[in-house]
Length: 299
Image 1: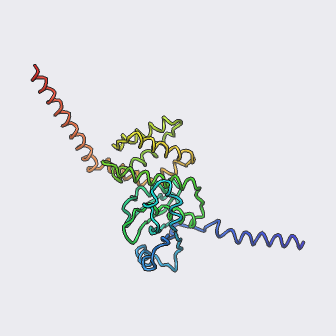
Image 2 (image 1 turned 180 degrees about the vertical axis):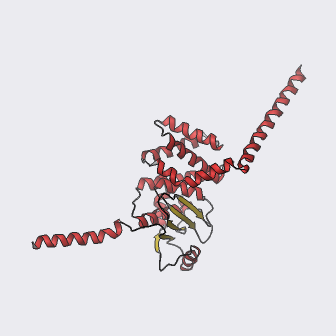
């Protein structure tokens, strides 16, 4: 009996020690904040004020530069990542099926839409996200803190391979955005369109994946080189191997898809596409006239 009692007590003590770390009593409206480990005390206070949170009543998670390098070294030069953890963020958990929303301040390389896409890939869901810094930074390290904070707040452990692919996606999209004629919004629209097509009709071969990417590129008017096409194909094949719930990913990106759909059907969007059509029509007319003029000259 004594041995049984001691064994029972040991079990209870084990559960009491493990439970706080394994499970989080998270509910809609809960807030968690990440702060870069290399911020000065005054910078931390300033960012907390900007986020409108009280440091004594909110959970704060510190993110180190070592953690940033852990997830970005494969995709970015070490010099671009830097030696200091500066990017900070606030996550507010939302109602079930509310989806993701993102806003930023002093982030000049990664856009709101890029964060949203990468977070959905990682498995983050139903949250309002705010990423900031005391001065202008690229924001590439912000994703590391966001995922870490989400895990702490919800108790949901995101697989390492999901984190890696999400960071690769973010960097790939940001690099594509730097290409002439693309930009941040169109790059994010392309990634969203690819995900939407995969969700509706999952590819069963490498060629089908390539066709989906090319169709999405044509749809969003993004001209891809062979290298860019292969890079995207490799990225999305990695996502496919993660066995993502594509319906959930699509739902988390609902606001993003709605935004792109709204633009395409708005007067501004229709005017934009009409202008493109008129431009190419004029070129065709000019070439036709030039051809006839040359033909008449030789006749």
